[in-house]
Image (cartoon, rainbow, N blue to C red; front, side, top):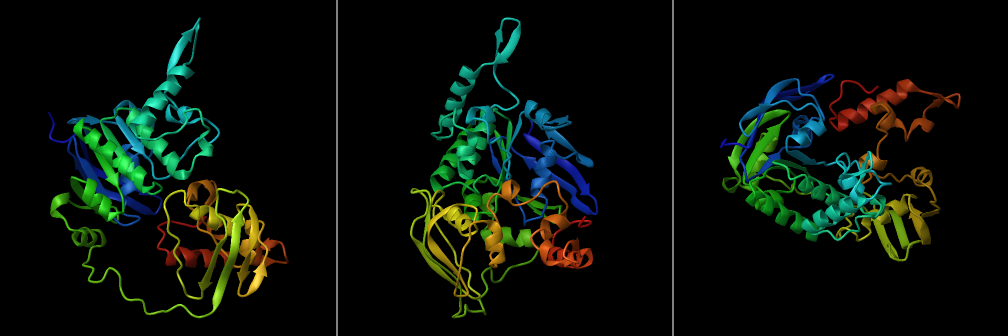
Length: 398
């Protein structure tokens, strides 16, 4: 038996103007959880997408159970026993939970000369796998009726149902409640006992210390090193990730919020009785106001209501002391309110448009010549400046 269930050697991947992966390696032992860590942009997800066949690597080798394999696409990866729970969900919202769970591998039966989907078996098996991951959903429910966290749970059930040799978890707990996280860790412990190798990507240090057996750190697309998780402190992990010792993770704040109230919300109520009701708060100039709560506490729904995405039954919103009426997102934007959405792929970006269009779409109407011709020179300056401030790696904005 091979020492490692999975080995990646010398993996390289470049995009136009950006070297995302440079001679990266990863070795995962059977029956272990291997944490893959690094700052945003370190190349963790890119490496896993190369493993899963989403990206074609420029160079490198992949070994499974000691044998070299070539992965052409995600279907090929799954056929070889590799499954992945993606950070960015790509669900088919109009189809059922069961149809999403078995998408591309539906159970079939013969109906005369025809081969048709065996819906009865599909929904029975869906119920079995949902029960396996401690999720009580109706297999026939439309996926679009579930929350983001519940959709994530369906993705986890899908990966487990494939009975894979290797499972990649790319930030799986980002939208899960505490109870759902506990259920996931129970599943992972069961998989560990069965000899399944797992790669776990997360920024949550408490999860890493709790679930991981080994830790590999990446930085700027390169391999830094691998260590037993039990031998690494949180400070040591962070130091490896950023490449320098952090003497003060939470430096003292020099600025203090002012007395001026920038936004005030009074008794805001959703049109849905089970959503947010009678919410009031004040936001002062220079203040960061946090909203806490478990998944399902209606935090996201509240923010979307303020931004005009969700219907408001009653309540008032004030900006700089002036009452504003927000029925649509454009009303919120005109009032000076922006929203960074929870589901960036679903309703945060235009995937088919350029970086320039995505960054600049909210300001196009402010930079017009003669009232209808875009001032591309000014827009390019603003977009380029924003990209620089956020350290976005891209060869161009077009």
